[in-house]
Structures are given as C-alpha cells and as structure tokens.
Length: 97
Image (cartoon, rainbow, N blue to C red; front, side, top):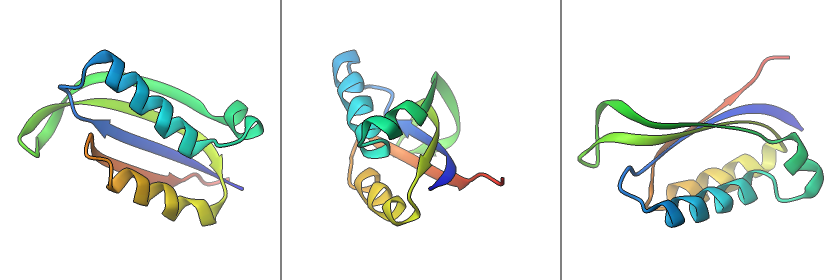
C-alpha cells in the first residue's frame, strides 16, 4: 500500500443529491473495504473558482482525499474517474514517506 493525495474537481451545476451520490461512488472506488475506508481522509473544499475554464465551467466543486491504495488499483480508479462525465479533473500524487 502506498499513500496518495487525490484531488478531484466535479461539475458545479450538480444537484445536491446527485453530488452526494457521486461522492459516495468515488469514495467506494478509493476505499472498497472497511479497513481502507477507515484510512480514507476526506476533505471537501467546496465550490471554488477555476484558474481557467474546463468544459465551459469557470467554477468547480473540489474534493481532496488522503488514502492508502494499492499501486495496481490506481489505474482502475483513474479509468473510472475518466469515464465519469461529472468529473472535470483529477490528480493522484504519491506522498513521500
């Protein structure tokens, strides 16, 4: 297991219920087991201005996580995020120990 910092930007025009469901789905990808869920440290930054427009959006809903993830699973999680239309951008950064 390696420690990662994950930043995700969601579309700003999502309804509260849809955003909550999407966040739960993302957290399920990041921490599928109970032991991993305990190590997941979420930090919702909320709505913020983007530095440049992404898909004609000037604002985005920011999510930040610290998680311990198997390196083999990172590609799978990135693929899931890539094919989710409501995710504007994501970034995985491996933390130094």
